[in-house]
Image (cartoon, rainbow, N blue to C red; front, side, top):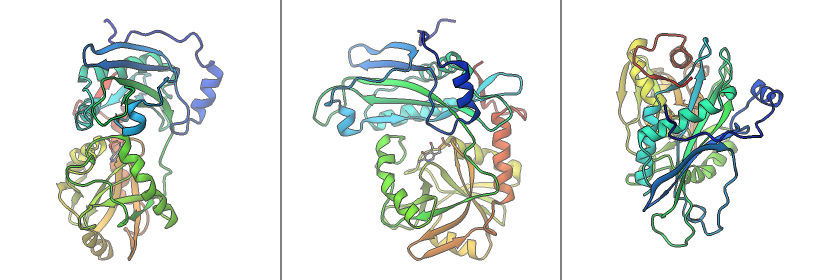
Length: 360
Ligand SMILES: Cc1ncc(COP(=O)(O)O)c(C=O)c1O
């Protein structure tokens, strides 16, 4: 099969002992593999220059549009090693579609699903030695992204855009037995109707840093954003969607509109039935959260996202708010759903939904 992103293999790969040392304790987002996928877009030529080559720094003019106007979008997904040594992606078509939607919202050119999948898969094959072994909770995190590289000052869509995929081995995010406490900020909001909340663009995350600092100052791990009009309706956490489990068997999550449409969120909603839960997407107020955690009719709350899979939420704090969830410990449905998703991703149970895509 002809490669969409032809491979120009590095002549200076990371020595195997160094790579093994990194894989023994990869952390998250600090060690990168040897190769990257890339392509460039211009209005006349469209996407061109597809290649996989050595990881190379960009050279950008200080007037490059992205540095001033943040015309940039990205994705995040993982490659998982199975027990037989094969390597798989989990629902990457959803990432491809979301990347295209994000690009449209930021007036960037779209990468087709075929090109997106080829870039990710061919990079994983080139750097297969970097995919952690089966058995732990490690994976190869993949970061496709796109940015405006044209040199100009002025607010309009750029006429030169770079697409790339980089990869880093990723360790376990979740320390079992624990859970996080979220800060409900009424100072900062993440998104408003018509804004960029649904897009995965860098600007959303830059704007979230002040809220995250506020959360840390109040002894919380992360932010839970609420709507920007009434400061009352739950939206999502910094890098995860939020779900509630109720004593009458519902799995409730806020509706789409101003939040990121998470792959993990969608997967949890699809799996809910197998855990005896009815999946419900509807607005949830802070008042409901407070009252139902207090009277025990909300039994568990968790956050869902690719990096941490599922993270138990054991409490919420806010200006006039201090809520404990369940007994302050991770709930059993949360842990069961987490295990279910990991079982699927690592091929430990049958993939009856066709969610896995083999790469190696
Ligand atoms: C703001 C935000 N919400 C939710 C998610 C969860 O999305 P996914 O499950 O696709 O990783 C992410 C992670 O990408 C995120 O950054």
